[in-house]
Amino acid sequence: MTRFAYDTTPAAKAALGLVVLQADETLELDFRRMLAPDVPFYTSRVPSGEEVTPETLQAMADHLSRAAGLLPGGAPIAAIGYGCTSGAAQIGTERVAELIRAGRATDGVSEPVTALVTACRALGLRSLAFLSPYTAKVSDRLRDVLREQGIETPRFGSFEEAEEARVVRIAPASIRDAAVELARQGAVDAVFLSCTNLRTLDLIEEVERATGLPCLSSNQVLCWHLAQLARITADVPGRLGRLPVAPPGQSLSSPA
Image (tube, rainbow, N blue to C red; front, side, top):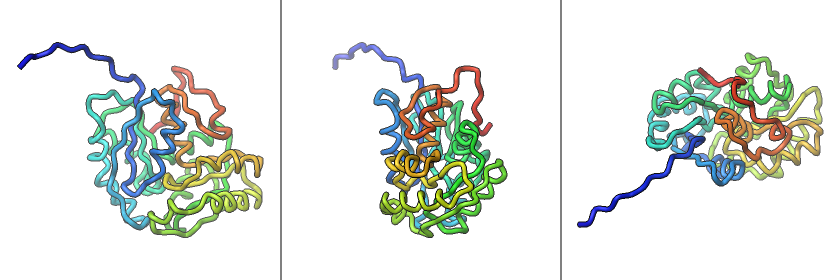
């Protein structure tokens, strides 16, 4: 055997990590579109139920640390995102951060709830037209969490779908029409399209043009917030994407 010497190259300085639901078919594809080709992101999967209920959402807490621990140990990861809006609301954002860090050391942790609150504050938004794919029992918990953060959801609509495999099949046109109808009911600052598995990325600017309001989605705000935490840029659609990256020294909220 001949043993060869080799050179090494430095690891990326701003890699991102994602803990994605077993049932999710959308989040990774959306992130790859919003992040520059030279920004690495690594994904792990967490077991998730076939139906979305408070119980199946809470059950993910038992697997989050192990899922985060399956991210590459040799790559420095600047920030890790947990890809479930309703799960973050059910488990609790601070608890999610604790569980992620128990599995994988990282400076920044986010999920769509913290990301949404941070985006709303950055844009000066206090009330949302909230469109959810899920049952009221699931959505009510998220609405309560937002209310605790000073964000009201006076206009609420849902597709009342409990089966995760059907959520990803909801037609973009149905999502767009429902979002516009909710916004036109008035008394809101913006539109929020909830759920990382919902195919919303191509609808954001269309909804903004139709309503004249900012439109936020779970995947959009999560990518934006992780990029902020990692001090990198991302091609995020809509008004949110026109905000500058926070300069070094300026704090953005992330669960401690």
